[in-house]
Length: 582
Image (cartoon, rainbow, N blue to C red; front, top):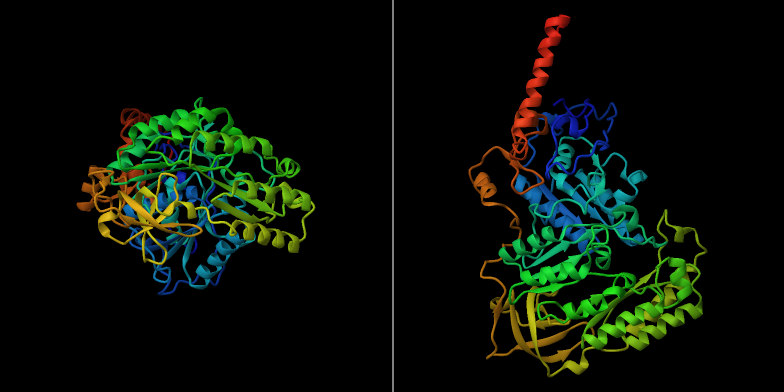
């Protein structure tokens, strides 16, 4: 490949081969992928000892620092990208200063998150770091000025992160922003059996779908994740089973709206959940993600049964956003306050003790004092133990950004007032003295305790006994705070272990087949491709000369097509007397 300083990078698809199909059973082919090539100015065209030509750089040996902002869906994407890069040979580091490249995985929900993202880009550039951008910000607005000249990996293209990183290290700017489709139908995203490095080896985050069916006027995420696209039930169940085989004891289901799952593929959330419940071993738990009120209403009976299952946390995150119907209408939330109350009241009755978490936006355009007081009354009525309070930020390109804005001082005061109300009650005081069963999964931020959760997904701090990690134990609650309880293990209680399999170590790659592990151990010249069973380690420019495992599926057809092409070329030589430089 020519040196980065004076080359024009072709489309990655063309470098692989104009004829070759891509991985994932050839489902993810896209002809309209546009890697962006950065034109270098004359000063930067000068080679120095510190800036070797691109073809002298060996990809796969550099250190990469990954920073993720936002939701659990984004965190899962970050884990998948880390896994693929590590399987290829890159070292994933926690030290940003020593990294050669920064992979910044962004969130577009609120202005502060994007501000942090923008500042990190600036810091990376000041530190002369290579940069690859991911997540919802560049997907939604790839043409923003501060993103110019930088490589971008789209939210549905994370299975190609190795390619983008490799070319970025060589000095190219590559952008892959396409959607995954099968016969014209949008897919949920990259395949679920990719290599992965879990941030917590005991917790597997599974995205069951991407996008949603709503068109909320304040939401920027819709611009990035698009309309609803669900993964098939079989793939999700297989991913859960694989996770348990790797020592995972807790699974989080995530998406932009879990309640809408399956509506695009002829199924629904309860059907998926019952299949997953069958796969959960004793001592392990399943946590459901956020669901909007409209898509849970028709499944209330089944959802109550599922949330009562001993291996499913009695926990549900249902954002209300406002208790004013007029504000909800301006938000285009497609439900009214009565719908939200119906869902909450039904579940509280059928699933005693259930934890209902919710979100509230303070100062949405047009929100009056009366509207805000309705929201205050709702919080007073339900005293939500988990409440996410957000001051409204107008996101560029959304309808809400063009609406008449509430003054900043008013928004700030309402946020403060609601926060004071939330902190005025302690939801766990009455639980002191109880005996609870908890699952221990992580360490507290202050490193003084281990963090566990009881059947209602309420946080319980327990002593730092390494024997407890990953186990389900019984504890006596002796203290309660605003956001947690403290428990002491019961000496005569039974301890449950979710799996006899040892959990993966911190930083260890999940999803590697025995074939792949053997390949890595023996140093075969292969590079990890979008499937864990596709290891290859060869520059992109050499792919045409290498037969990959995923290319062997249609080997006969491919050999035939190549033979016909050669035959046609010979005929052209014979009859046309053409001369070709070799």
